[in-house]
Image (cartoon, rainbow, N blue to C red; front, side, top):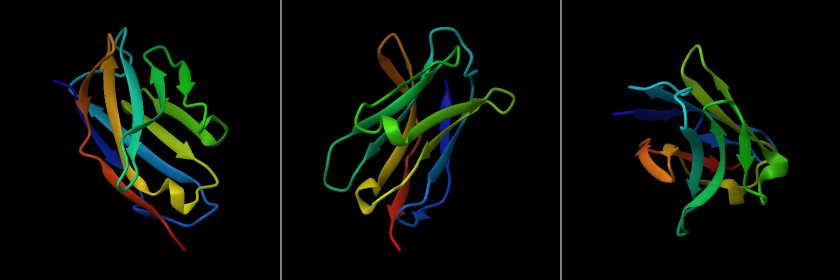
Amino acid sequence: QVQLQESGPGLVKPSQTLSLTCTVSGGSITTTDYFWHWIRQPPGKGLEWIGTIGYEGSNSYSPSLKSRTSISRDTSKNQFSLQLSSVTPEDTAVYYCASETGWHFGSWGQGTQVTVSS
């Protein structure tokens, strides 16, 4: 069973860049047909998909966040990372990483709270 764990700062100042890392264990991020996602949930709202990086390194991003988002990976550490630039208080949310294959989101991290505030 794949396990995921998010890590990164819990507080980011407005206009700065939010950076989070997801460490994957129990499976490789290069496993064929697996995709690795970032998803967030703002307070009082539903889940919002941010973007993904595929097993071969390809990316796809939410159109509403694409201009500010970058998802990368480090295969030597079996990690993938999120960078969201020019953050505002509206980016305050619980951020999750998750694995997906065949449109099935099989494993999720526990989530990490990120607050954007000066």
